[in-house]
Length: 450
Image (tube, rainbow, N blue to C red):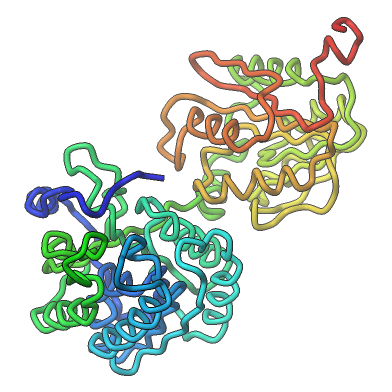
């Protein structure tokens, strides 16, 4: 998480203005949207990040519902004049007043999660968002904080929204920055401008957004002259959000089932798994890295046409291969008749069973960061204590990949509770063997090390 101090001047809004002129962003089009659901971690986030969108939706007679996660009672932790209880009541009233300015008929649900503790109460937000989406007109646009915004509550709210939207048909997600305007730098940018979307705001919408922000005097004005009562959103901060357009980001998505289906329609064998010396050698290195000669039950995620799967059947009593593409699975069944196969898109579609070997080879970089994290959770939840996860990934650019092999390996290593048993890195690929809690080195397992 980024460390920043809202009391510092932060990035000059004029620097962002100059940069934004160069951004070629797709427009936000609400004409095909059936309803809008906005996730606001704190009162005023909905106005700062999506106030123009809410007002534009009102003009289009679109229903809007805002999920206010916390009441923002910790906005002034050092205030000598206002207690958290005082601020909670005040900010809640300001929220309702601001929303009436933006969209007089918008609905709102206040979840009463403690300010600063969205991570500890993430399931409250998840349940509320799932409930709200269950009855919303489709397609439903969900607008939530950008997960990289630098504030923990914003990150968790953004992650929950991504996960719920990914699992809910007929919904789309856009993410808004709030604090990133303050700490990010147009010269060395962190915000994902390649996925930017822009909503142009007419003069009336801009005026309503400014009036809605003014409905938050507890944030835009000092509570008093005493230290600790300074304004949170001063004029310099507000200038980032009162532009002629609102900037949002589309989520980074895993490669789609349709794109894999199209690939196998063009190339039935997918890639040259059998003929390529690179593939043959990498497969041999992968099999040699396995810490045991025999496994009880192996799961291969993204098995493609089953070339590695067939080799795994010689090392495991039972093998299950999964892939998102039905055409690949059909070929795999013929190539590896001793294995079982299922068509599945992980992590959402996960097979039943326990495993002492899970193989993730050349597919992790097709997953969004959130899907990769959820895949690790799934693996850990179904891996036996004496089991291992084997991950192998290409290190060069791939136009169809969401990320790259080094990023995947670094994330797996960061999330795994134990150091890698094996880590092999060469120019073309990186391979890691990540052990369960009961796994020891081969030397220790054979009594060679005491």
